Image 1: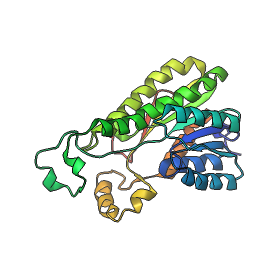
Image 2: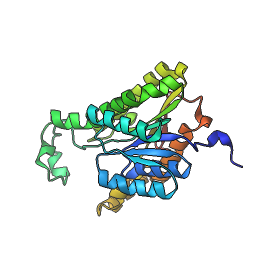
Image 3: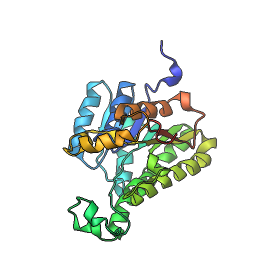
Image 4: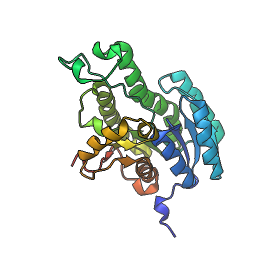
Length: 271
């Protein structure tokens, strides 16, 4: 019989950005482990497909489309989740966007890139900056503010935030993204300390480049993938299942003394 300390069966969870990629993998892995879910993302149609898979595993699945950058939509999602599940034991903040461009145009860079977007050769705009930070950082704040109080009241809960190796390892054309992910690791530490005595653990996962459908379907990706893999000691990308299994561990009683940590899943890149 499996160790019960690793079981999350009977728990409930909200997973943001659950319509594809890592969020979808976490939703399906949690359902496999016996968790009832509320899945949320901006695309209601894609969420319904995920929900159908979850229900096919015999689990309850509430669908609540929401843009995490908008507080009023997150508040509605939280209300729907609590009404549909009774409580929320686990919050996985996975929604995120990446807008890759230099902060300001780099000398000679125009001739070195195939980007056809004229905005790429302009300084980063307020709208671009806000799009990334509002989703990646403020969106997490909105979700925690909406769902954290019921965890604190019960003195029981797990918050798992999706950070990135970009939190500690910078890359060209990723100033906005890396800034947001570094801020999330800081938020994780501070909130973990603030909530520790209330028995709510807050941790983050920092994946390296992960193999997801929308990358694999890009005809240019095989060439890019080869270059990326050559820089990874394990010579391969992470899988979404590997990220999801780490999330399941952090959500389990086995991780009850881990808080305030960003755990990197990177094939040795940061070693």
